Image (tube, rainbow, N blue to C red; front, side, top):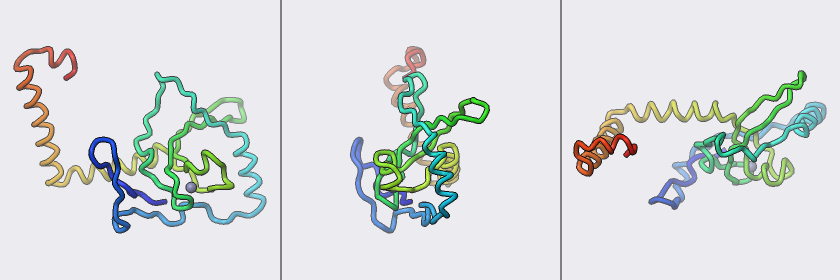
Amino acid sequence: MVWFKSRKHGRDSRERTDKGEHIVVENAHPAIVDRETFDRRKALAAERRFDVHTSPARKVNYLLSRLIVCDVCDNHFGGRRLLQKGKDGSTTERFAYYCGGYLSKGTAVCAALPIPKHWIEGVVLKLVRARLCEPDSLAEFEERVRNRIDAIRREYGSDTRAIEIGA
Ligand SMILES: [Zn+2]
């Protein structure tokens, strides 16, 4: 699994990062498994059903979509909701990032493991929080928030419409 292959550049484009900036996680792809385990997992996989038709009201934000690049097939990971049927007939929702190579063409193309959404986003948020709390970052963050408030105050003065329209 390779992270940070590109960074945001301007508003809508991305630029490639240097190899030294990549975050590489080795062996994110599965080890060779014995036949019995493989067949069992394959049978389980056949019962899985991706549900991509989520209603807009229930839209899920996958914060890390396109930021994770597969080290097996070079495709980007994307978020999917997975409905798992329990033995008692109940359905459980799970959210995870899957390799785009697997999503479009199956395990014949790529057998990289999915990454649970809540877990990986928790790890990233924890790191972001730690980085944000470093003095330089905190100072920049404060300055940006202050500048934004100042700009809105300049535009609206003490007009409370700024609050009402959520400026
Ligand atoms: Zn892949």
